Image 1 (tube, rainbow, N blue to C red):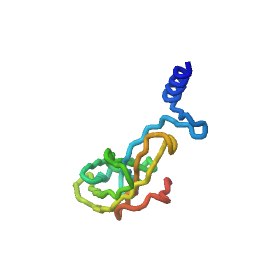
Image 2: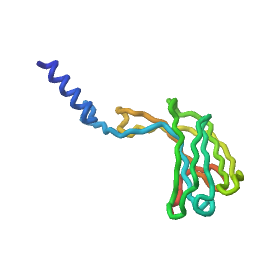
Image 3: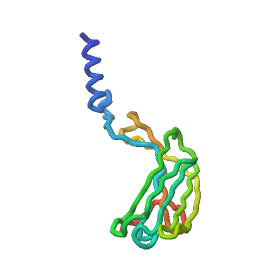
Image 4: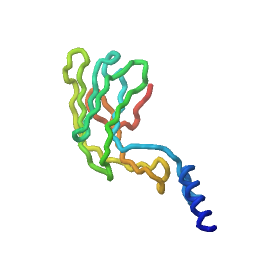
Length: 147
């Protein structure tokens, strides 16, 4: 009987996303390892005036700069093999939408930060970094004003 009760409790805790410890319940948030890029469209001129391309290693993602009515835009490059703090190589290229002229090229090494969205003892553990794109290149996103 004890075996059935423990199995039922374990199954219930797994289905509800809770740990067996009352001190640290687990949630069921999903997260992925990635490097993100934030920017203000106004920094790059008119609406959709530029295309921002972020490459992390050999994987790249790109997006137009966006509308001026949005406070900021973003894109992320997934890191399927991330299992530690890095560093990982990051490259930014900004081109004009109209003529395809490169206006910004920059590179950096990202040091990834460990994230545990469901608690330290609950998976997943992911690794992330964030940069801000400005007309001068890649910068730290700290202090990014949304106004």
